Length: 311
Length: 314
Image (cartoon, rainbow over all chains, first blue to last red; front, side):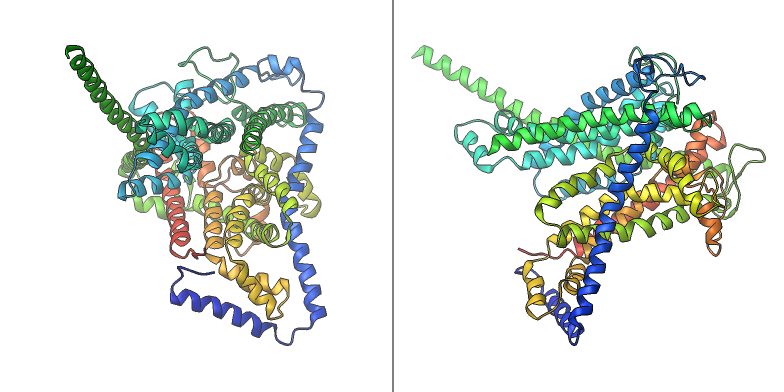
């Protein structure tokens, strides 16, 4: 039922129904049925359009990658010759950067979520921060690249295209995702559990540490992994901060230059040779997709285990 | 009595320490939350500062009225119109595919699919949004454009259509999931009022459910459009790098020939080795600011519509 709707709103609904019924008067049941069938057909097509397209594209890319994807490919540096090319430095670079993003974004994101859910009063500041976060989530990723370039490279005078700048930039990029999913996880902890803890005389922080956070861990982890797989696929921000699109040695420390899997795929997508176009590049794509698949598999596993435990 | 006093003092000290600890933790979490505000301020300041510097060398009128974009090749010219034209063309074509498909998918998920089917389809749709855009770009360039050549022999290697198709596939889940949420929020009673008066399911769906969920649908559309405007890699790889003003009256040329969007132009400058003092480097931030303002405006409108016109049911 409509409970809080204003009078005008209620009138709107009755009008919607009235118009519907008036429009339906004198309908031929048979032709209506046919129209309904056609409409349903379009809906099915729309739903499956993307899924089927992606599935067939994946078949193509796996077919092309077969034969190219071997141990040599995973352990060699990129090369001008398709037979010798590999993704080792980029794979290490991607894993390195994303691990750093995890280290930076977990405390920041969870901390912000705890502030918003547990400490903030429902006032202007909280609404401002929440509105700001949902706006940040909609900012194009390339703009974060400009932020990284202007802030870390130009202003703080760090080098172009080093691991730490990449990690900072991507952290800012995925932080809204981490905050929102952590907020949901924290919010899902039942109030009764909190009262139980407070009733035993614990302080707020003790309650958060010993009751809220442990219960929210699965939700936080799931959101975290989704955010990290986002970071793993980001390309444009890394281009803007001057990361190399192709590099021959794996990064050794926080301040060494690096490249990442998506950057290498971007670089190779320009190579017209058959061995790259229908061989090396698809193989690199498969490597990236498999890494993402593993990450998402872990997220699903955590979610599944958690929901089973709850029952 | 002496030891009692000691214990009391110890406890007092402990509780003072605890209170301090409590306040410190609250402050730490507040600082974490502030990072998001600082990020926004940082974006605005960085973009504005460099863009203002850019507009000292290239007048803002020139930027918005010149019809040629050539930042690195002499004689350099910084007219953003071709890039905006490219972005709008790409966004329009993408929206033409993604909006109806996303809406129909939402209708199917919310009104027709049973629970078991929905439990399979929703995660499957989410996968579409999880594939990196650079991969979509490669798909468009290497697999979709050759396929399209069978239908349109005149299609060029880099073209708008194939980029739009993959980006549409990418943003369909966004549109479908937000629209579906708002359709499912429409109370059963409204539908049943229609059914009870003898109206068929098809008509109930399009004349009751969709209008009642309109705010959510419109806000999902705007969000999808904003995504398409900010899309970078797919359109860079598959859409080409030809900054030109698209003639909307010539759809064949608009669809089948290369363009350059604002984002693709930024990548092109980012890939070239321009130095921090050059005008080309600063033009990055002017284009970035234009892009940021466009998407920001759309996001705010989308949020406003969602909040202002949200139907409240219980």
